[in-house]
Amino acid sequence: MLSFCPYRWRGREDDFMSWKTHAARLADRVTHQGSRWCAAIADTPRHFVPSWWTWSDDRWELSNRPGDERWLETIYQDRTLVTRVGALHADQAAPGDHPEGWPTSSSTLPGLLLQMYRHARIGDGHTILDVGTGSGYGTALLCNRVGDDRVTSVDVDPYLTAAAGDRLAKTGLKPRLATVDATGPLPDGFDRIVATVSVRPIPASWLEALRVGGRFATTIIDTSLILTGRKTQEGGAVGQIERDWAMFMRTRDGEDYPPGLADLMETARTADGDTVDRARFPILDLLQTWDVRSMLEITVPGIEHHYSEEPGSRTALMVHEDGSWARAVSTHGPPMVHQGGPRRLWDLLDEVRLLAPARSTSPVRCRCTRDPRGGDSSPAWSVEGHNHLRAACGVHYRTAGPVTARPSWVLCASPCRSIRCLIA
Ligand SMILES: C[S@@+](CC[C@H](N)C(=O)[O-])C[C@H]1O[C@@H](n2cnc3c(N)ncnc32)[C@H](O)[C@@H]1O
Image (tube, rainbow, N blue to C red; front, side, top):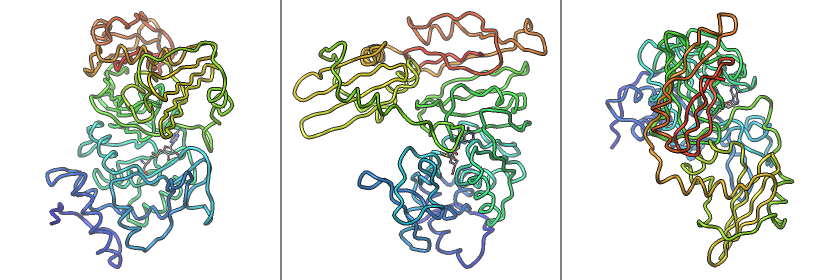
């Protein structure tokens, strides 16, 4: 039986019954009656996302059947709808198109949006910067929660902000929308910044855009780490890695992501290694093993992974833009590992896997403050809390000392789930 929360309806009466029932079911699934998000979910149409891409038979297929009841059912499930692949948005695709590449925009699954909003601690009266407009569905939720006059949403893609603006206006919502790269200058004066796109480092502009006491919630590129922070009186921030997981696509600065390392991946697939050894651990599909992948990514940022299974064998490939590569193949018994290039990527992964069980998974706190030595025109910054961080990171913590450079958050490598935040 449906037990959804009360909600306000602002759309047209003719399509009221059908989508409202689906939205109410979704609200029941991803919230509860006591949640202040319940009414927002039940009140927000998601079927203004008309088309999306589905991965089927090893290629992207267009899903575009507005009006169909099963189409509506799919939209109101708690699942991500990939709306843009490479440079092709599903709205602009023709039947028979099969774009190649990575997803570059989506309508995030509603449960995950709420997870991020909860980490951002969004409350009544807050002004919000929503980073990554995408379909505009998350923006609509925020508007329905705090009021559209308090929401600004930004995306790097002009089509997305324009389409979201039109669709939101049709449901009676008029938040401020802007096409900007959120890693650069931003409007300011926000109580909250919440990102549904991952970043590394945390852009300096986010500290400028927040009010003192304001909070941000984001994820770190290619990790499942959620980082939150609060802006301090001095203009720095105090933050932590949350005891929770989420993953989002990475920020881009153009129409599409730069091409991957296909040639090096081919080398990894076929070449004999400079070193060839038996592996210590079984092969993992790192794309599905979020904790290990996050630790590795923090230690050695930028590794591309490929994993495949065939009856009786498993293969994992790793490549890095510095020319390093690794291939691990297991048929029967321990995997055989070939490695080439300047770094031994598989050995670095082994180190992470060896040390992982000994690590504290406690949230790590860090504080970044303005250093008066920097003066006003070119503020310098320093990091406090080293002892705490040393305790959390164990033997692999490396002391950096005060950092004096431009104000931007940088996540510094430590081969564990712990992270120290530096201003660089
Ligand atoms: C996962 S989608 C956001 C989904 C959205 N919250 C929704 O509910 O539909 C991530 C979005 O981040 C945007 N994006 C990527 N790089 C960006 C950047 N540098 N600045 C701002 N937005 C960016 C993408 O265009 C994409 O639309």
